[in-house]
Image (tube, rainbow, N blue to C red):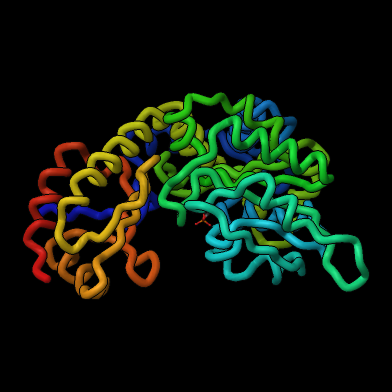
Length: 341
Ligand SMILES: *Cc1c(COP(=O)(O)O)cnc(C)c1O
């Protein structure tokens, strides 16, 4: 029985062509800024988003944390949606690394509205933190892969500028969005003070995230990357994988999104599925009916070779990726139909 692993798009492994490309990379010591492949990757992403500079990091957690650190001082407050990765899944790093407070907004499927940001801004009193930074996620992981289109991002950006707030984009899966909306990276870049991109998810690189911003911001980011222990040496081998991913693997994301949508349509017919969140990209969150335990379903899925994760008290998440093909959908559904409740 073939294993169907939908736990995350982070499980993707480099294919032979990517490995070949990695092996021929020219490398140097990136702490001295002398790794030509890393320099080329940073330049490529900065140019793509119409920004001045970028910095290669080991993870998306690090790029987000560095961004928060660069944009804030202690006693500031970060505004974000309550399900966002920077709040839920970064070990409380905003508080540990940056000593900032957090103002959580209850959005819709992970998305914020401009007026909610305005309402979250603190008046200037001694006893309140300073509202300085907003972080939005695109696509929204816990929102079930929902996304902001260009107009929605523009509206948020304009509102942040109006209120003198910095704006960070956690774009871990931004390219899954761009293949849907066909918005251009160089239209998105100017809307944000910083952008984080993950190459190690659906794009298939083994390691790597990039933080993009203006030159002064990236100069500051290099210092914080170093103090967090993220200054790497001949990491150009990894940057080469990211380069390969950008050059070859973006179209795959469209397929991943389509597969998730097709699974979503089928799941609705299963008796133990109460609801499926609208499927917009490659993330699929579905709710199990009241009288059935999520753990029981996950165990039965696992016994049938299907790996998924719990994503809330009654929710299960599937994430599609290049290891899941269109003709795996039938197989997946056949196995899911045999689950007993
Ligand atoms: C995966 C992810 C990150 C970064 O995660 P790392 O595992 O640290 O690379 C950040 N934001 C979102 C929304 C993510 O899904």
